[in-house]
Amino acid sequence: MRTRHARGFTLVELVIVMVLVGILATVALQILRQPIDASADVQRRAKLADAADQAMARISRDLRLALPNSVRVSADGRAIEMLIAPMGGRYRARARAPTNPAGAGDVLDFAAPDTSFDLLAPLPQAPSAGQWAVVYNLAAEGSQANAWAGDNRATIASGSSVNRIVLAAGFRFPFASPGQRVYVVDRAVQYRCAADGRLLRHAGFAPTAAMVVPAPGAGALLAEGVTVCAFRYQPGTTSRQGLAALSLAISREGESVSLLKSVHLPNQP
Image (cartoon, rainbow, N blue to C red; front, side, top):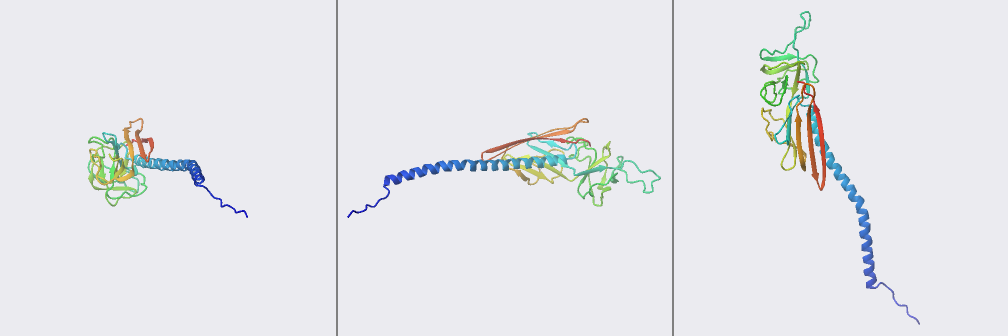
């Protein structure tokens, strides 16, 4: 009678199979890893670009709301600040005709301190107490026609309406605006790039004649990993608008994105 011999894998065959399976697994992993890594890279770059774009958009939005001629940049170009004027109107410079039954109206007096004045058209909303009324702002430096220095900036009191501005104390504006413009300013804002790579936004600090960096108070974080940060501002003239140029580069996890943006600013005081 014949006996059937048991058959199986030898140790050499088992080792060969394990080596072949390892090689195939390594090849398959490389094939699968490439699209996975590419997808992760795209997502990482998208997040980085989105962070930089949001920071630029926030700065640009505040610049467009800035009081004309109130933008200023630090000496090293790593900080920029402005006074935010969310609304403005035209003050009454002349009384109504005597025949007008509504009365003469409250004219803004430039010859003596005044405590209130009417507006020719209603504001979008009534100014709040503590905001400032600014007339004929010409520069962000110097002591004349400079809202940072305060010679043309008066504190608004309660009781103001969309048609009338009431001042907290008698104030004499030094210069009349050729266009009878008055701006309502509600806060000062500063953007700065710190040495540790953070982009910060300071708001709500008191305006000062000289630029102070960093501005008082804790700054809100806008971006991290900032490697390039440069602000430039070219004041406007009677024939052209002012121009703010912003350069920002952010690096994170081996990726980097750079943005450059220019913002044209009105300069009619």
